[in-house]
Amino acid sequence: MMTDRPIVVAGAGAIGCFVGGMLAAAGRRVALLVRPRVKAEIERFGLYLTDFDGSEKKLDVSRLTLAEDPAILHSAGIVLVTVKSADTAAVAEQIAQHAPQDAVIVSLQNGIGNVAVLRERLGGRRVLAGMVPFNVIAMGEGRFHRSTSGDIHVGEDPQNTAAALSVAGLAVRASGDITGVQWGKLIINLNNALSALSDMPLAAQLASRDWRRLFADQMAEGLAVLKAAGIVPVSSTPIPMNWSPTLLRLPDAIFNAILGRTMKIDPEARSSMWQDLKLGRKTEIDYLQGALIALAEQNNVSVPLMRRIVAVIKEAEATGSGPLRLTPQQIRGNA
Image (cartoon, rainbow, N blue to C red):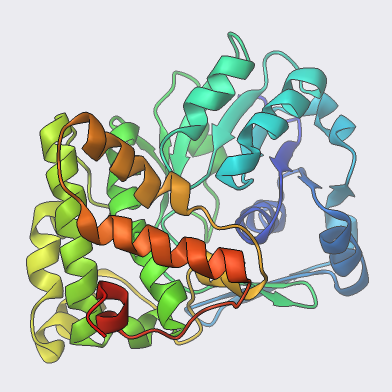
């Protein structure tokens, strides 16, 4: 593994700044390819990483390389792709133009189609799929807060890229079934839209049985689609994926006891889709619910709830009204 060459985070937003910052804090050479606003923010305030467990790290800007120019990719040993799914093709062109041929490309993105896009545009380069289970919130003034728990998973490869990326406070595990892991994460990410439409923190939303039932019904649709397609999703928690809808429907006290043993969520946690609606940005709904709807059409599976949720998110995008503060009944179309 090319540990003497920098790790370049291509498209460093909330996830990219947190992951890159943790690697830099552990002594790795890290460069962040960022937008001008993020560069200016970190140059002014430094990079401040906080965690749901109360830990924190403050990095002076001198410990990072910040650039808006993709030429920063020229010496990369590993490239971590953290852009939104819609920007994957564009960042692939930058990597193709600037990164060394032997650089390892790792997709740390939502959805399941990004690796195919990267491989198509990067010829014979080594491209690995990855999955980030935790949420990161951009808090402003250079602060990026990890608000939920979980370890990053990266596809196995002979060079053991996962081990090269694993540092204290940021565990990265090699997976022999990274496609199953990605589908499992996509099923969990179906709640991103519900979190966004509720305008509630994740912990408060998941504490409500009505919201959990809505999530469970949507998850059941998704699991039915995967079963019809012959895809076996891998859970990122000790709870088997097929048990999740039943557990979500349990009374609050029982559910909260189980959740507390399997996942940590702090009161500040919000979904990335909530952040997108709040800032008037286009969401990744087409790469989450949209991917399952496309698969449902191929396998003649009905998914009316997911279609309804996509329509409501698209309306929120079109109006620019931000999170809509809807109830579960309004989302179902019953109010």
